[in-house]
Structures are given as C-alpha cells and as structure tokens.
Image (cartoon, rainbow, N blue to C red; front, side, top):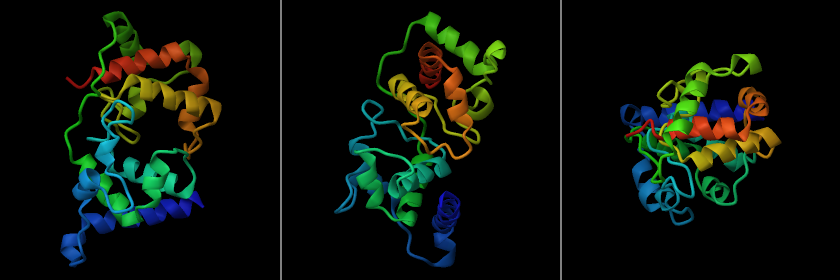
Length: 204
C-alpha cells in the first residue's frame, strides 16, 4: 500500500540523516548521482534539465517519494523505473539528500517571451478566481522553490507541461492527495505554458 511505502520512506530518510550519529554505514548519494552503481545509470547522465527534469535543490522527500513510486509501480517511466528499482530505500534517500543540498539550477533552454512570462506570473501569484484555480504559489512557493510540494523554479517548461498533461489524462497517477490532478482538469495548456515559463526564469 502507498501509505506503508511512505512510512518506510520516512524511516529511510531519517536513517540517512542521522547515519553518522548512529554509527551506521553512510551511503554516498553524490557517488550514486554522479557515477551510478553497477546496475544503475548515473542520475546525472539524464537529469540535465533537457530530456529529464532538473533535480538540484528539489525537496528531499519529493525526490525520494518519486523514486519509491517508480520502484513500486505508482509512477511509470521507461527511463527512470529501472534505475529506481536498482536502488533500495536508503540509497534513494541518500540520492534525494544529495540533490536537495545542491543549488537550484536553471534548465538550459531559452526563456519564453516577456508577455507569456507576465501572464504566468499572474497565474502563479494570483491564480484564476472565476475558474476556481488556486495560485500555484500556494503549494510551490512564489519563487517556485517548493513548500510542501515540488520545486518548479528553473525547470524546463516542456517537462512541467508534460507532467500536468499526464495528471490531467490520468497517465500519471501518483498524486496521493489528488490535489494536482483536480487542478490539472481546470488548467488549459496555455495556462500551464505561461506558469511554466514564469517558473523557469525564476532562477537567474
């Protein structure tokens, strides 16, 4: 069950955080991210912000949860699922901790035009009251660096759009609370493109 998986994940994160104090062997998340393991490709070989999402500065729990979801079939990816299945919970937690501690970066793709970014700023900060759409900032932060949910600042707008589309159609189903799936039904692609453009340029 997803709830049980979340509890195991929380325990793994705690174990990585306090490994030094308990005398347990410390797992090197940086080495896994940069060099991989015999059965796992290096995370950095894909996660450049072009063909796969940026992970630098992402919330620690969010990364670990996505890896757990890939591993347990709650989220689908031909590229990431095999890697996630090659990591155990503590290795996943170590990778998540490493990436969380890195400075947030900007995906190496061009910024959109100023008009679209300004439209996105309105959606991010104020939402759309007539359509009952909450501001993106309520969950993701006004600067896009995350709060209780994923950091979006600097992320490739094409990736952000694809995730919302997948949530809307049900292709992505690991929104445990159903919050983003409900919001995705109300957002048009143009809404998302604008908000994603604003979040992308939030990292200079």
